[in-house]
Amino acid sequence: MTRKITRQTFLAQVTALTTTTALTPALAAPQSAARVTDDKKVRVAVIGCGSVSNMYLPHLSKSPFVTLVSTCDILPERAQQAATKYAIPNHYPHIDALLAGPPFDLLVNLTNMQEHGRLNRQALLAGKHVWSEKPMANSYREGRELLTLAIHKKLRIWGAPAVVQSPQFAFMAQAIQEGKLGRVSAAHAHYGHLGPDWSAFFFEKGGGSLPDLGVYNIATLTGLLGPARSVMAMTSIVTPTRNTGNKGPIAVVAEDNAMVLMEHANGTLSHVQCGFNYFDPYGHEGKGQEKPTISVWGTKGNLALIGYDWAPFGVDLATLDDEKGQRYATDRAGYVWEMGASVVAECLATGKEPFIRPEHALHVLDIIEAARKSGDTGQRVKLTSTFQWPVRG
Image (spheres, rainbow, N blue to C red):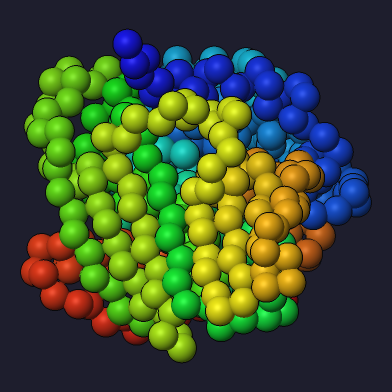
């Protein structure tokens, strides 16, 4: 019998591990061992105190660059419980009250993805920097408007995922840039599970497997291979109804199955598949996984990322000079997927820029929109968005 592991269950299972053994000094200070005085720390407010906050808050609470000021949630008891657990002095039931409360510098937005654009805009208008879980907006156009607003107000906005921060991504990027693969021709990535059952928003309009799951792989492949020039895709709904914890049975509206083909520069093609209908024998945590989830091929070698890009275990590299290949970059060096807010807090406190860029997040969002358009029309969709590349040089 296959046991269904939901995202909520997974997050609950690994919270204890993350807050103890995983919080190495490198994790607590993602970019350096530097510290700042209390008056230089970044004052942080967290909005959205559901399951994802159980990963973010332990990480933020141990960052030497962060002072946690407030929590906020439309379910007041969740905001209160989170504030009590992490000794945060203030908690609120609505963003208006949060913004009117004690001052803070950075809003960490962990709400349902359909709310990201609206709440991020409200925070920017109130003079706050923003770290947003993915996606940072509900359309590419809205995301561009948010970035323009941030620049106009001399603020910063960033969007998850933080996959480009991992040592495994850095190794892969360096190998490609140094020509170890020769001319890169193709890449494949996949990520999926049986679907979350704790909230309906994943399956409603504005949700879907692309912004929840495919976003990781799209960020990684564009980060490695450069911006996509065009997209072709097919999307579908495999499971038309879902039983959700907060709304009971619902009709699925957003795609729960997707195949995305991207054209990069110099003839390079890449492919991402994602969905909420994937049995994974290793479970959501991926423990014991020895098979690649991302592969890159070139004329002189190939790379394979072992483990998901949000939780990588190493990189297998084979070349003409070493056809059998070896495993490299087995040390995560403190990298975890929930570190993004801590990374940008360090940036605000010290001026040390992260590898995460808002233009990259927006390009990924543009690809997701293009994939849906291609799936609806059967047409190849050209892209005009771009970002600074290579991400890590």
